[in-house]
Image (cartoon, rainbow, N blue to C red):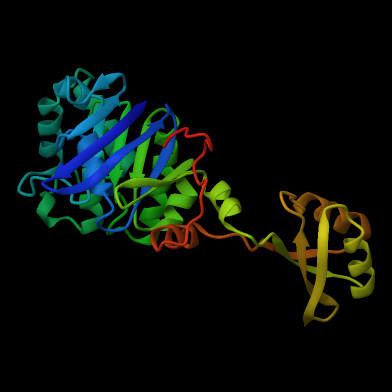
Length: 324
């Protein structure tokens, strides 16, 4: 568990982080986002003990990072954006070095082999790190973060340099790790955050600008409550029956997409989810559903709205103050 309270960092007259507060619970994967210069990297550096805060507290698994930095850091596995590799060592030698550096008490051979298998670097464990591809170097960096099985993982751009197949594997691994670890994940690939993370914090100008699930942020920021549904069947009958459903504000049929198939733009009343009602109506009337999609904002849309000054009030999980 990570608890951050009124965390502040000043650089001379400039305040990079302005008293931010949030909590990351056990078994939760938090996406930590922010544009360049927003205070994101500074916050992550304070959480890992790389730099000290000006004021406020950061508690890692019950240990204050300033009061007992060594004990707090023992609870953290950290993968910075540029992996901390000794490139003239072999993968095996490097991981053994990190094992000793962390004074790990787990059975050395089995523990390191398990991590190598998990990160899929077993086949390169005897190779010199500098001769590896960027993707494999990134995997070795992730492997070192897992040594000692720390309860908290802080991962900064963990899929940089990986091909699409490798990215998918690492995302799956992070999801699996999230079941037994507290994870903070920072990435510029916003679709990755949306796929992997349980919750999102967006920091902007040194403050927490949003804290909630991506779905909830989308609903809060979007004034548009439409579904686009492509149905096969008699257009007039479909229009008549859809308009009779409770919670529907309007239905408009678009152009015929293929023979007997029309796309319907369905607007719902506020806070009404029509997907199940429409699915049931389609099943009852024998209308094959060929497409159904919402017009809610993507995480990229949300990020741009907030960081470009178009956000709205009340974008935190607890409207009474909660995590901010």
